[in-house]
Length: 162
Image 1: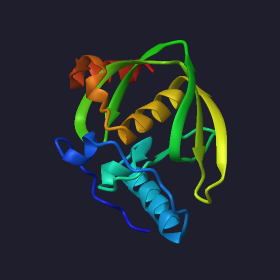
Image 2 (image 1 turned 90 degrees about the horizontal axis):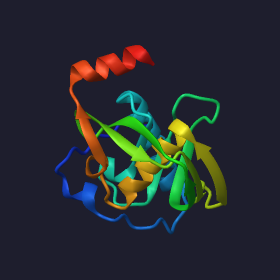
Image 3 (image 1 turned 60 degrees about the vertical axis):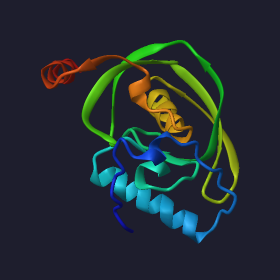
Image 4 (image 1 turned 180 degrees about the vertical axis):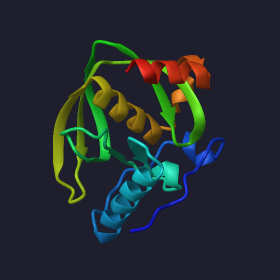
């Protein structure tokens, strides 16, 4: 298990469309484990492979609830509905936060580390985190969706009201 360095903007890899994973092997399993360790070390709720310099369609999400750690390989959004406005940050943009409008509900198809396909549904904060990470795999950064940036004072106010 290795904690990787986080790639920060304006690194080119963050704005590239990632390659699909074709080989599901021990190397992939180790990468997923390293991504999890890295996400935890940097106090994130999700991490996409390009954020550690790997141009592959791999992301993990763990929002600290009963859903546990979700590994998404070659994920596709099948359906979305509703909307939610919420604050997002990103490990690749340290100290930057903004309001982002996203669908409230998402249904996705992805593969697990063994190459087995699965479909899952998510709502609210989990749906937001999943969509944020899938965006990374398509070279889409949350900053392109921000309606309003928050300074530290505004961010503290929001956190106190949660």
